[in-house]
Image (cartoon, rainbow, N blue to C red):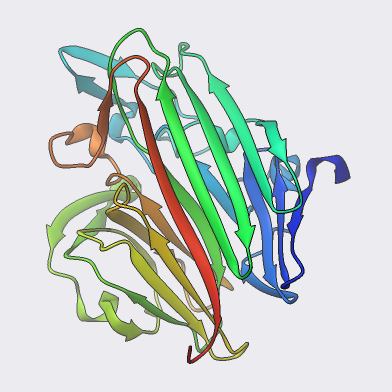
Length: 294
């Protein structure tokens, strides 16, 4: 629906389409060239989950094993929120956000969630998007509104175009294997075909793995379009998930996260943040576009 499309644009050639449905970016283009994979329909109006170009992860990202966790002496249970048997990516990506502020170059969206039979999390989230020249800055804040302290996390789930010549640059310390139900398995050294420290093409097969010890920097090069994209994340983000179904797919996902998937089951090492009532967690990432070679 046209009323669910908000547009940020500037005279330098950057255009971002956003929907309040899911707080999702629908497309990002630089002089007409897609740099976030555009969706075929506006936000959740399409009823196709994960079709958006980028959506917020709040109050956690990825899955929680057995849809439950133990925290500070209490057991908490969540309900599956999609066709996946495990609760996935929190709540914000499945709900309508309200508009706090909008002008040609910036947008602020707000979402409030109450605890219910499906989740113990009660919180407010604010997501801001700002364009400046060839830069798109995304910020996400979550504030605990529950009556008790709970472990919170956040992240972003962008879809990037995948071309035959795509190269990815990113440094991390560890890699997690994938086990059943798309959960992280064991930590190990990064396999050669998934080591992007010096730049490498994406592996040809299925890839859906968590990485930690990330330095908050990432770069993608697309020789076919002559463009490169750099991502700079603040210190809140020290994990990422890399999802690439195959060379036949025209996209891949590089997901900056404040925590490891399934961290609720390993809270001492997973990166989640204990928020007392009223406390907040914030993270910011900036996408910068360049001509290839700059």
